[in-house]
Image 1 (cartoon, helix red, strand yellow):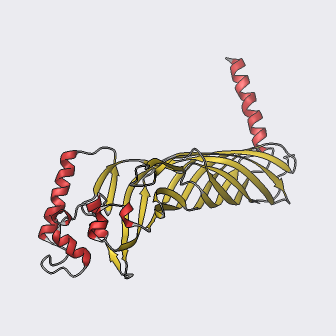
Image 2: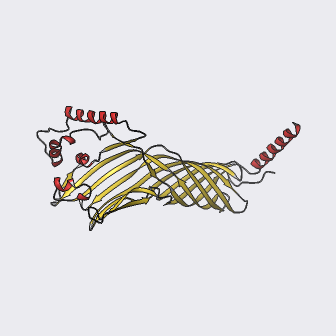
Image 3: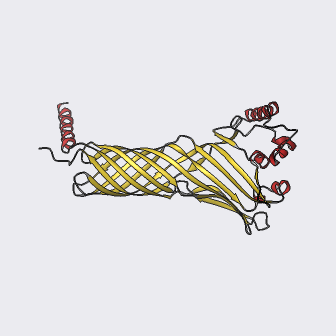
Length: 338
């Protein structure tokens, strides 16, 4: 018993001496990061020679994690080797191809642009006492805000749905804007780097690392859908998306109850019948004329009040990190205790 007590007492004294051998200090790191895609997954379909005998279907693979980030870390070094910090990083994603349909000179493609804010609590380990120090960081990635903007363009709207050729035979192009929000998730981040001491308070550093982060979708909202005819007239076709099996407002869930889904659809149709958005006997726009004609369109299902439901899917935000920055130590130079 005495030997165990002596051992733990000695160990505690050694740890205390190590932790007090250097002055404790706060620090601020300011860093610019480039994020490259890693662990690519399927983002969407790639269809070539669409509608032709030699049509082929493959995958668009990539990651929404690609982009440029600005990171600020606010931390505290307990001693010369160990510290803890909180990283706040804003990432502006580089536009990423998500879907593509082509046939001859006809092309329909969907491009995604990402805006995200990450909070990452990080544990730091530094080595050595020379001006050039290696270090490692590990942390938990918490996406706290942001979304994916979608931009769809087509120079041949019939690639979207053959029904467009029937309803709008003179349609020349199509554009749509959408937004996807993600649910809360937890990721992982690791970094290896070196730090060069410039003076008593400032150091320059560089690092490489990775982030593993897959965000489940929460909702998908189509904000705009426009057809342009041969005369250059823009036609709002947002209310007509359901004819092609698309919806203005979609929520992602863990499971779908078919009876509840049918009840939701019925409620959306009833709400439309009780309070239509315009006088069905006197439509004024092309879209209103189609809504007045097709009873399948006379519903509020697929809107925020009566959202369409789909099973939850993950979006890939995995990335490889390359970062450079400056570190400022608050409290002056660390000195050995006398």
